Image 1 (cartoon, rainbow, N blue to C red):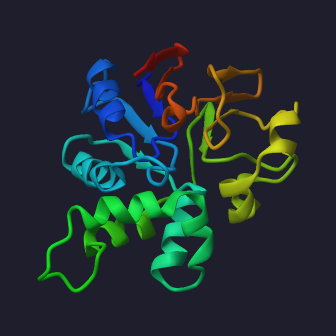
Image 2 (image 1 turned 90 degrees about the vertical axis):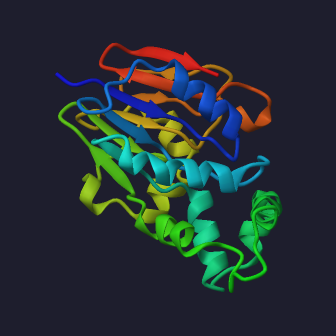
Length: 211
């Protein structure tokens, strides 16, 4: 069975991402690499993180990139649907990173490749034994019928849940000091942007790598 490597919330921590990627023993042709969303905001290098993730498409044959609630807020900001949620949740740091890479000849601050990347992100990914999602799931609701807002924002009801989802749920969104491992869920947001570590879990071995 192919290995799966899933990486938690990056939040603009580009250097930690590069160090972590250098640590994981992944086969770029056989193994699956999953990112759980929240690539941007709060950290200093959101532009570099997005640029790096885009570049991985040409390296890894099995690459899965999920959307986090911060990507949703960024998308809403760019479409003028909601300017304030993004700015109130670390968006100023993201814009600053884009200003540092801006060119006067460009019509917009955010390159089309980056905005298209944000729009292309999936809400969940499912394998034979695991469900990968940014935030969580509602008890008793099939994955295909889960509300996007829950997949991106759910927190306390999911964290308290001992519901058997049929597969172990691997998620980010809620930061822990160390990875959370329960019968029905694995949480791998370990607060990289708050001075803690960026975490990757290797499955099915349940082996952790951190930077």
